[in-house]
Image (cartoon, rainbow, N blue to C red):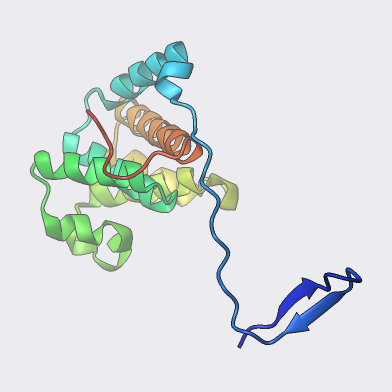
Amino acid sequence: MTTNTTANATTGTPTTSDAAATPPVAAAAAPRLDFAKSARNVFRALIGFDAAAREGLDPTMVELIQIRASHLNHCAYCLHMHTNDARKAGESEDRLHMIPVWREARHFFTAREQAALALTEAVTLVADGGVPDAVYAEASTHFDDTELAHVLALILTINTWNRIALSTGKQAGTDDR
């Protein structure tokens, strides 16, 4: 049973009742801006940064990184887009399902992929304690300096895309690429 507080119509004094509460009706959300149209040069620069970050990286690795960051950021729009992209690139359903729990399902991922996933988590959650030296050191054993720089750049771009999608209210399944 829920206790409701209302104002007495005559006195304005708060009163309570134990009637079952009716959930409030959600107000219609105000339409949000179309980032690509409203900030064309910024959007184009981010597309260029994203494309440059991917250079030389295995497409499967790219999608694993993007999916894991999107999970952590709760970005349904990007998660939907990148799981579909991963399938098109030949990624298996088993591995896609294991990405959120990769530490408990390490046998699904190579040591290199695990290092990339750990780095993705550390950079995405950087406010929770930075990027631990051990995580960075492990990644540096699997990637040369150029590859590691590209992995870091990719992690930065997906985190930016996630924040744009979340801030502008993008809906999963509406990707029009």
